[in-house]
Length: 196
Image (cartoon, rainbow, N blue to C red; front, top):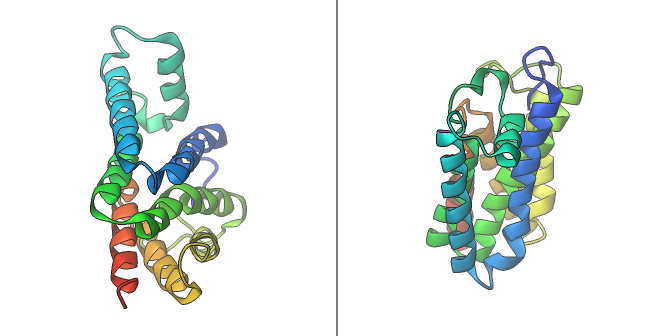
């Protein structure tokens, strides 16, 4: 959903969205061993935060470089909370919701957010009036990808409704918190719709 090439170097955004996409690797394990996914994400998040906290004094060359590559220019001297909030959103969804609901939340935050960012940067011209960096085209790409991907796991009409909710959540300027809010909000709405 980012469309201003002067604001953000494409390689940083690509690195960030690749991290989002790696969240999809946990999808096959959700229904079989959610506890293992929670454990792995918790350890990875703790390790990431340690790297962020101690990278100034004792940088681990490979890991500190990877973390630096994913940071936006304005985040170079601060902790980037995007990855920990993404992990926390997935963990919380796994704890409170069942497989289909959590899967929809994960698809929205991992896949559709990346699709929206790439589409918005590439083809988005008009920014959404209440955001500084998201475009209508990026939001449209989010909606379409969410509908198509979630319709694999839930009925199509529900996928459309949940995609609409996810698109609204993604369009709200929350600075990193969307990584937490989207999987929870989408999973919650999916759980309500699946009870109908």
